[in-house]
Image (cartoon, rainbow, N blue to C red; front, top):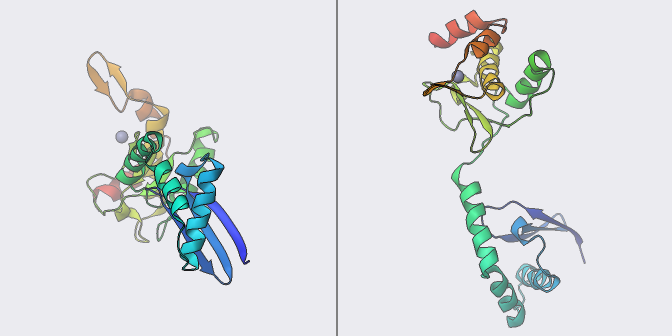
Length: 207
Ligand SMILES: [Zn+2]
C-alpha cells in the first residue's frame, strides 16, 4: 500500500480525484462531501481505488455514491457553490512585478495601524486602463488593473491605487440626502496623506 494523502478541496463542482505521483497516492475530495456519512466516504474510496487500479466498481458502492450526491440537500449546496466559485475567478495577488498582498500589508501598517482586514487582493484578468482599481463587495476583493503590473510603473503608483481602495474600505459610501457620496470630504482629506499623491496622479493620467 503506497503512502496516502487525502484532503478536501474546493472544486467548483462535486469532484474527486486520485493521482499516483512518485509512488505516493494523492486523493482530493470535494469539500462539499465534508460531513458525508461513513458509508458514502467508503464508497468513494472504493470507486477511486478501483479507478486507480483499473478494477471493476461494485454496483452497490456506485449507487450509494450516486444516491448521496443526487440527494436534494447536496444538489442544492452544489448549485450554490458552483454559482459562487464559478462566477468570478479570483486571480492572483502575485503579479509579474508587484505583489498586491504585500503592498496592502505594508500600507496597512503605515497608514492604518494594521487595523484593516485584508480582502482578497487580485490583479484583473484584462489590461483595461479605464478603471485603475475597484473594490468588489460581492467577493470582498480589491481588484487592480493588470495594466499596472509592469516594471515601468513606479511602485508609488500601484500603492496609490491600492491606498485609494483601502480608503473605500474605511469610508463606506454615505447617503447625503438622495446623493451617494463616494469620496466624502473625510475620504479626500485622508487621501492627501499619501506622500506621492501628485506624482501618482500625474503618472496615471499620462499613461
Ligand atoms: Zn474611488
